[in-house]
Image 1: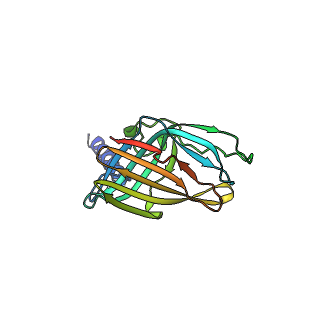
Image 2: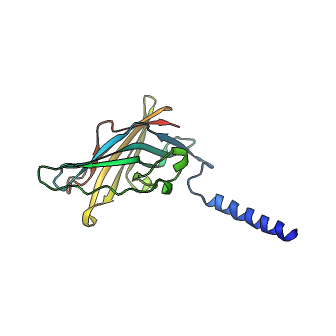
Image 3: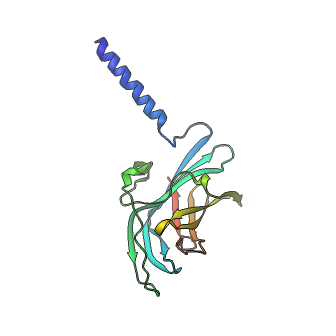
Length: 197
């Protein structure tokens, strides 16, 4: 009986240790909000000539980490679920390779967000490594950041993300700001539409 109790106690300690190691939990000074879109949204991928050559479509999701006191956005994870891709010809004849996708089970909060494979993870955690900006105008909070990604042959290309939200809805855009290789991605002017869970 004592041996079983020791095994049960050891198992409990192991579970508690694992729970304390889980990243992105709602503790202390930081909170998390969860956003999803029920209607598929799209963005466009560009070739080296600056021509759109592929459309990526899926249901958007976003997890936001914020400071509970200032409400400033500290970090986020953003992508599309149930992704489909359509490649098409360009004036130059240079196509665009498919966007890599992931299994939904590899994404944080997959069950809570209702994510379905394949998933296009556009923004991984650690936006603090990018250029960031946060503001509140007329009751709507906004945050923006730039990211650099690796393209063909390790070429770096730039995208700019901008999100505006209130207590109910969130709207976002992605803009191709690469003026060297033109390999960034771009959405429509209001490309992503999400609601708070």
